[in-house]
Amino acid sequence: MDANQDQGAKELFQGQAQLYKLMFNHLSSMSLKCAIELGIADIIHSHGQAITLSELMRLLVHSGCFKKTKVNGEEEAYGLTAASTLLIKDKPYCLSPTVSVFVDPFFVAPFQSLSIWFKGTELTLWETVHGITFWEFMNQNPAINQRFNEAMASDSEIMTSFVVKSECKQIFEGLGSLVDVGGGDGSFSRIICEAFPGIKCTVLDLPHVVANLPEADNLKYIAGDMFPFIPPADAFLFKLVFHGLGDEDGLKILKKRREAIASNGERGKVIIIDIVINAEEEEHELTETKFLFDIVLSVNSTGKERTESEWAKLFFDAGFSHYKITPIFGMRSLIEVYP
Ligand SMILES: C[S@@+](CC[C@H](N)C(=O)[O-])C[C@H]1O[C@@H](n2cnc3c(N)ncnc32)[C@H](O)[C@@H]1O
Ligand SMILES: O=c1cc(-c2ccc(O)cc2)oc2c(O)c(O)ccc12
Image 1 (cartoon, rainbow, N blue to C red):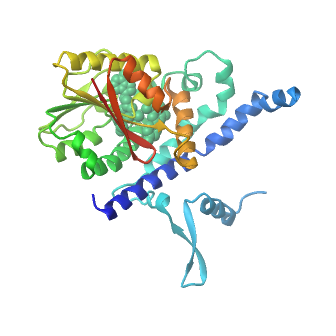
Image 2: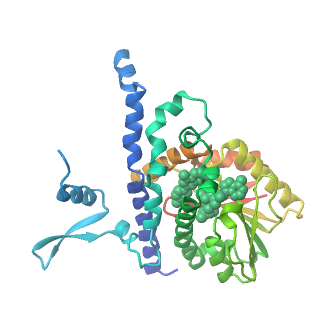
Image 3: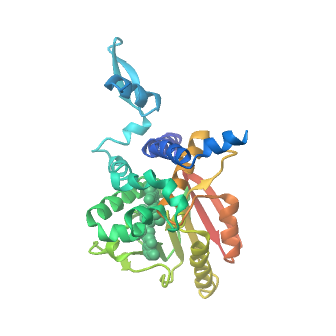
């Protein structure tokens, strides 16, 4: 990649992370609500105007979503930043559908009840509020399922087009087969298949996600559950899948992949694209976005976002011998795991 492309990708991923932060900003106030309902401030203590449009714009400018500028050097106006550029509809990368899913009442509603969940017994807050698990909810609500899958697809498109142009494309070179586990509608694999026609890609996901999707010569879909069965392959890709799994389930999946690699003559690897929390070394705002994601995942699923040492423990406990983390996607990293 040349320096201009590199700069472009950096800006793109910074913009994406910034947009996610804005998308999840309501979690700060919901956490505050929860702290009030649980009486946290009281416990610690006993131990020891309406917004006008211009004010709203001021807030959005302050948060970096838009910038204040001048037209003809005089008139005040609002311009786009890296984040709001990702909201333009007819551009190759548009995150507007993603933002609209994750600020929709069905998604935001559970956060109103954080304190009820803390006092209850359900495994996830999602179940406390919606009565069924996140994936069952998607199965039973086709319109929302479609919007969620489209949001995941736009996330994949941004990332994959970057992967196939950057040095990290070498991790796919020479592969004969790849299973994209929990691969959604296959947007990631579709771009990989086009860039590497020699790779036979299989997307495994739940039936309501992969039903009736068009296959290609080297792109197939399997409707199924990743826990009992994942087909053999030279590489297993998990993009934004482990963050939805607790350590016990994550370990189950990784151990089976380790066994699959052993029965393939120790040939194969696991490729993970996910968040790695690195609060000491990275920018404050990036860590904040990752922490917000952590709340989303621990509320909607049994998962969490992990630090490098938490990831390493999972890999070594599953019997892998080494791994490499490349933090190339703004808030997400590419993790290669080897036997
Ligand atoms: C956050 S989405 C990520 C989708 C895709 N990898 C991407 O990054 O765009 C997680 C995916 O895991 C799938 N999934 C969840 N549980 C699964 C299971 N038990 N077996 C197979 N897929 C599953 C979901 O349907 C969903 O498509
Ligand atoms: O509730 C979620 C949200 C996500 C999610 C949101 C935005 C992205 O760009 C990626 C992922 O992922 C989830 C997930 O993987 C899961 O297992 C349960 C819930 C969610």
